[in-house]
Image 1: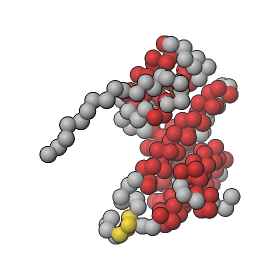
Image 2: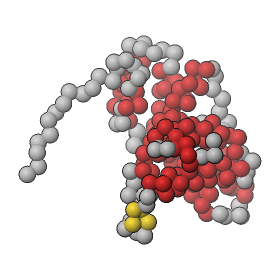
Image 3: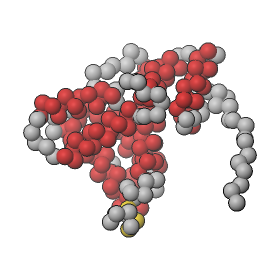
Length: 204
């Protein structure tokens, strides 16, 4: 028999704002709470920038909070890197530039330190989401048609190889690795924090 779920009172994410901002996994609700915080002037120095990056990441181009444009850009760069297509260099360069723009890593300058801080918070959240999606994915953490699970160390090395490919090797082929450097550092730092013995997988 399926048990009834108890309706628990919703956590007040405004308490101690913005400490729990990224704990709001439902993006529609995240936007609603952010709108409330703006109305209440809870963090006026940063909340307008939070809204700017929230809209860019989840609500741009007719998106309605269901698609992460940061994750999509990451997937597109990964796919391009894996294709090893040596033709159409100009097109690949344009596509890489566009994906870097979607990550706020190309042709984008923060107007002040407050905006830079909020952008880095958004990158940090993306890094956590990306790593969680890897380690929680059965297909990512297994081989032979999902039949044989990989060891933890093999999964960690797989993630490291992917991060190196997307943030260093592939953009370096177009002379654009410096644009990826800020996100790369955040990904490495987040990896070391989230993964057991994480720093041992990097030549730090």
